[in-house]
Length: 376
Image (cartoon, rainbow, N blue to C red; front, side):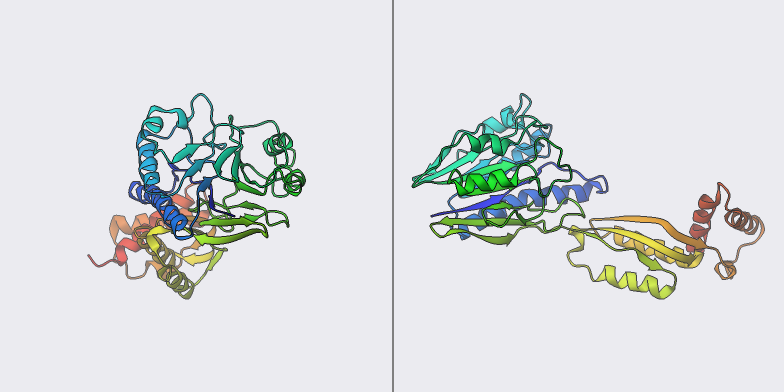
């Protein structure tokens, strides 16, 4: 019997353009924390080893600090760890795995899979890894490797690979896509007994055999990932393969359907939803706002968004279809006179004429209304 932990796509050193400096550091730290959590899970589940199926690092150009922190976290993992170079960190001349920092600080129980030679992990247990040596292979590396393997008896063999299977690929003409049919054929002929895949960030079973899985990324990286934040405990014995999903990640990326804003009640409903979000510091949201608001209500919306941006990991907003319509009530009781009053009138005229300065004028009016409404 084999029991091991299957994970992938750590992408240590990843940055996101919408993170401020402090948030970026929290995001990076969570990815190192995930390594230690994976080690804890491996020990708790009696795993014999861990495989990381590609893209351990965001690129081969990550800084020394990222490499050092990764290896420090890997020190705390109590089982052997096998790292597979993927498309983000291929095993080429500039590989991070060949850097002085990595080679000098790598713990003894951490192994880089450098070629497809079967690795004897224990009596009757082998790993066949398929490292990427470039960012764009020109053939199905899994088919190429398994074709050359002989069927095994009294040995359980795990194939560790990276890339997209043809049944899930958005680009079926990519020469590097993995043939599901050929992979299942290799399993049925006892060349391999489990295909551990990386590249897809969502936990996904492939095919119907139960022997081919993507573990997904332990921390999410984008809004469109269906089931990130997991790893798999895989067990192989004479009865076949069983898997157990384990939740690892703490961050959340949430993209809402278009939010229709037309009234104060709509804004309050959005406020309530935002306030009910859990673990706000590790939550990233994308809002698409539509509808039509008065200038005063638009000011309230801007104030709300400004407040939540100080708390949440990040807030991305799209307001292309949100119309702001200045109303007479927006300018009542502002107390403006003289030059200020004439400026307001000119800005209103610009907005109503929908000229090239209308958006700038609208924003200026909204700011005036917000400032005038505050208690100084």
